[in-house]
Image (cartoon, rainbow, N blue to C red):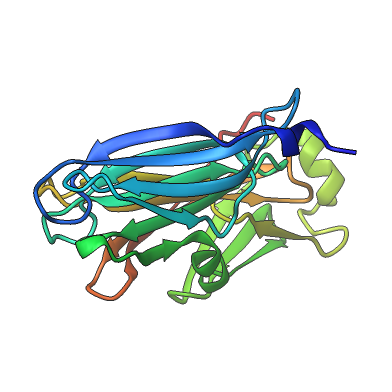
Length: 238
């Protein structure tokens, strides 16, 4: 039996135009894929670059070739004056995580500069509830510790976790999601983009959001290194 997906041809699902190979002639950059029948999910996601000078098409299947709402952004992330290719794909999971890639295409040679899977494996955290309405968040990558104050949370929420003396009723650990937002921002105003990365901090369950880890990543000549990190907390209302 032939499925509808198999019968469909790939179609363009994202497009951008700019010089990505460094010859000063704008190139056409596409993401193509095969939409699932009656669903927003797209399979067989492929990056296609059409050389503006020759019309030649370069095709690269993406590492994660299934997802939702793929998007393209062209901008200089390395400081060489040539646009790089920034791709974001929504996973569609409950954590709203994304698959993110940045490619350089100088001289029509693809080079993967950023892979969200690699960053997720590098940036590891511990989230531990403590006595007296505190949650400790430890970022292992840069050996930094944060404390979130829960004391203004709804009393019903706190009573489920703490006794009348502010002691934990039982040990509780939370977690930090993989990347759920990655945004190109030129913080320095110099025409070179940094990456602003968001990771949700969850408490007892995923909907029990405590805040976000926010990492600013900057190209250091070999990889995107950590420029600064902050922790943003949710409001006190539940």
